[in-house]
Structure formats: structure tokens, C-alpha cells
Length: 547
Image 1 (tube, rainbow, N blue to C red):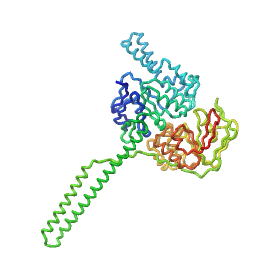
Image 2: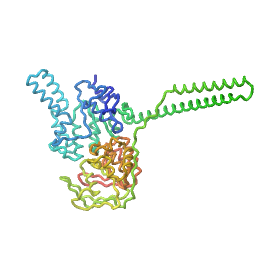
Image 3: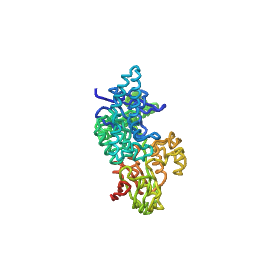
Image 4: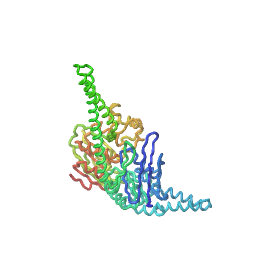
């Protein structure tokens, strides 16, 4: 039998709340399975169940054969304090654990422990299978491919920038050696060059693959099938044939479900009306005959019998309604209904830099000459580490200039979504932070956040305990409440699900203020109606192009 990773009727719950119910998934050689569904529906949980990091409350996860190697690469690197890049990659790829198991088995073999031969053979097989023997060599060769110096392997990982950490994560993926790869949002924070490397690796690997992603272009290009987790029932359905086939099949299934429901409602309503009419006629006929108009007993008996027949027909119609197969209306899950509250138009000047330089450690930005006018829609493009976020910080007056000048227009009312989602990440509760940010009433704050899927379970939690996706939705909720005339979005689609991204695109389409955006989401860029792109590399503006 070909190697396979199988989940059979798997279920999982957090306390009394079901996360997944009766989910079956197969990941086999040649498969590139995209796992999709709204935020919080259990996509990452499914990957962790497949990897063995969680134990299902029902059902089983089977590795066939039993020594199948499975690697789960989560969306957050989460380096341990003081951990070097090399140590982080080794831990992330299971090499640290495999090395410890091999050392323990070696000690057992030397001590002559019972079963030591088999334990050592198994540990050695795993150690070799995941590429532990030459990991250091392969990592040193791969780091320059992702734009990092090989010497970074000895640097402390949690001191790297977000872009550098993203490239370390990509390097770890490129040197991984698993029979089955489980990837959770692998495109987050990758630049266009990184995305190209990722796609080439995924399309060329022999490993079977299951991937959670919100990147539509990535899914379009790489997946061979899609597993969609249903938000209402928490079950899963598989669609083979790739991303476009999935979109077509889902739309067709939705249309057929709506048609079946409409047919059922029409049939039920017609029968209900017929029964009501028959019952009314029968009732009126009986009432009339109780007040005889003449001595025609034969006619009266005939009319009474006819009324009774109508009543019998009404009862038969009621039974026909009861026999109808009920077709439930297709379930409509929570949907983000997002608008951006506008402020009065800013002056002609939004922001300007003249000969500006920023020094941040070894990184140098500038000199930069840049002017942003009211109503412009500008995308800042460039590889990770090129200085896009630093340029935004300097342009908006958030970073001190080492030389040169900068200014922000006096009537600019800014809405800012930073890459680290730091706006809602302190120690206050979400409700407290939202009130401080927006100045609205408690009732309006709760109502607005509820529209963004942030309900009673969220508003009392410390903002630092929220997920990146929840913090992103909190910022978007603030945009809907507080009027702005300038939006600054740094990787806005990270941590949003596909329906939320589409709603964000729709809201931005109707926003008539100034838009400054940094993103590597190719589909998102295509929807922005840009007026200008500014391309940055190595801390300098390479191109400033009108669209």
C-alpha cells in the first residue's frame, strides 16, 4: 500500500464546544491538499491532529506505514529565549528530538538494556529519514538562497526582524525531509521572491502535503484538492481538481442547495394555502347549512356532504405537508460586513520626506525624497528587509530621522494597521483598549466588535492573549468606528480568512481617502485600484511609478 496519512472520523473538542466532528482526510503521495474555512473553524487543529500533536476525542489518525515521517510547520516560529537560528531550525524539523532519542537509544545499547537493538535501529532510522545527519550543511547552503547570510545560523533567533524570521522559516521548510508536510499559513510575511521559492519547493517536493493558507494565488498554483471545514456542522468535505474546480463545485453545490430549498418552500406554501382554503370553504359551508334557508332536505344534505369532503381534503393536504422531506435553508455563517468611517478630506499634502535618512542598527534607510498627496493609493513593494516598514515609519513621523526632514499634513486623520498588530497587544482587556482607541460608548464598542466576530468570549480577555487574527479584526473594527482620511496597512491580509479579505477589498474599494499599503498578497494587490507603486531595495527607492 502507498504511504498515507489518514484521519478517520476524527473529532475534537475544547471543553463542551466541538471544534471538529466526524472529519475524515487522506493525505497520500502526490496530494497537495488545501485546507480552508473561516478563522476559528479548526483548520490548525486538524493539522495538529494529523501530526499527532493533539489526540482526537473520537476517531483515529493512522500512519501507513507506521514509520511514516510527518512534519508540522506552524505559522509562528516562536523561538525560545536565547535559542540560535540553527537550534530553532533543528527543533522545528524534529532533529533535536530525534537526536535526543538516538542518544538515549545509544546509551541503552551500550548498557545492554532489553530491546535496545530494536530501539536503536528505530531511532537511527528516524534520525536519518528526517535529514539530521547533514542538516547543518544543507542549512548553510540554503540560507543564502532565501537572502540570509549563512553566519546568521549562530544568531539568537528572537532578536531577528520579522522579515528575517520569515526567511528563516522558509529556509527550514526548504531543508525539511518528511514523507508528509503539514504547513500552517506558510506564505505569511514572505516577499515575492520568497513566495516563488516556496511555490517551487511545494511543486517539486516528493512529500505529500496539506496546507492551511489564505493566499489565493498560492492555492491556485499549488493545490490538487481542497478540504473545506464547514463552520456550522464542523465536518469536512473534499473537492478534487484544484482551486478553481473547488470554487466552481462549491458555487454549484450552493446554488443547488438554494434551489432545493426554494422548491421545498414553494411546495409547502402552496399546500398550506390549499389546506387553508379547503378548510375555510368547509367551515363556511357547514355554518350556512346550520341556518337552513328552505325545506330542501336533499339539497342541504348534499351541501353538508360536500363541506365534509372539503374538510377531509384539507386533512389529506395537511398529511401531504407532513410527508414532505424538509429541506433546510443553506446555513449562512457569520460574515464580516466592513465599512471604513471617513473623516473630512485632508489637505493636498499627506506626508513628505526630503533627504531623509534613518539609521537602525546596521540598517540604513535613505536618503529618501518622497511626497504623498491626498487621495493617492500607493503600494510599497520590495523584498523582506528592504526597508518598507521603516520607510512608512519615517514617512508618518513614527521614527526619528538621522538626517533630512519630514512632515505630515496637519489635517491627516490616520488609521494604522502595523505588521506586528501591536495596536491591540497590551495588558488591558480588549474592551478597555477599544474604548481608549475609539472613545465610543461601551454599547457601541460591543456592538461593533460583535460584527467582526469579537463577542463576549473576546472582549474581556487581555489583548495580549488574542490571536493575530483577532487583533487584526479589532483594528478593522476601530476603522469602522473612528473616521479616517488616510489608511496605512502593513501586511493587512495576514491572519485574515478568505471571506474577511474579500470584505476588506470591498471596503477599500469604496474608501476615497489616501491608502498606503505594504503587502505581498498578489491577489489583494490586484484589487486595490492603485495609483502608484514605490519599489524599495536595500534602504533606497529604486522606482516610483504611476499606475
